[in-house]
Amino acid sequence: MVSNESDTFDLNGELTIHRMGYGAMRVTGEDIIGPPEDEDAARQLLQQAVDLGVDFIDTADSYGPGVSERLIGEALPVDEIVVATKAGLLRERGGEWLPHGEPDYIRNQVLVSRDRLGVDSIDLYQFHRPDPDTPFEDSIEAFAECKDAGLVDHIGLSNVTVEQLETARDHIDVATVQNQYNIGNRDDEDVLQACEEYDIGFMPWFPLAAGDLGGLEDDLEAVAANHDATRYQIALAWLLEHSPVTLPIPGTSSPEHLEENVAAAAIELTDEEYARLTEASAP
Image 1 (cartoon, rainbow, N blue to C red):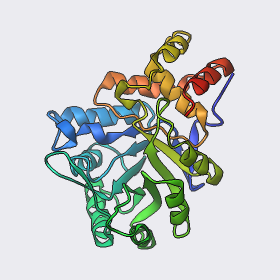
Image 2: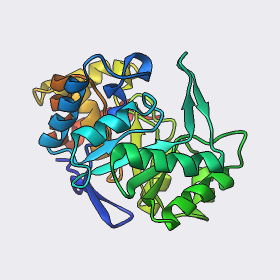
Image 3: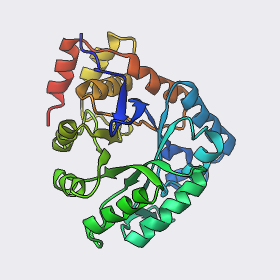
């Protein structure tokens, strides 16, 4: 029987979190712009996640923008959980995501995010995406300055290559990397392997690929039938069992789906099931 080494992970060997988190992008309005139609329902969903045992919430200043951070600060006991947020992307009302890694902007945004979240120091502050118009090392140095100033406890990266991870590690202690990854898209397997080598948490964003799991539906359904589970739960269970450093953060606006996602952490795949899914999804 395959089993996870632990259902928890220590960020930088210090901050212990459960490995199934919640991504708070979907507590915003349509297209991740503006507030949700029912803010009370969004706050209740966030509280439900914590009530289910989730102690790791991921968000970004660009979700809304600002809306997700504000709702988290209003709804949750932020001093009792770990909240990760990000800076480095701008939003346009038309829905564009624009990289913006200018150091002065990052230094400003950390203050804005602290205020929205209602914290003195951000647990995990992530560079959302490298900016082709700003030297990568300049952006990373701005994050390092935020930590040195006591505004940030831990620093993470997002949407980076192995080479960029190595560059960042010359300047900062990298606690996490958040890249697109799921059972149907393992293009960043090399980044995951680097995170394993350095004991860095790997946060696979888009972990359920909005239901498009790369043609693996038959394999997932066959395994799911053995566990009285959905194929999406099996896809999350596979992520947890594929590596001890994976920290899935599935997001949803549905209370039912939230409960299903959290319950996936309790599923243990047999050796045969894990091998079948791993082989079928090999990049």
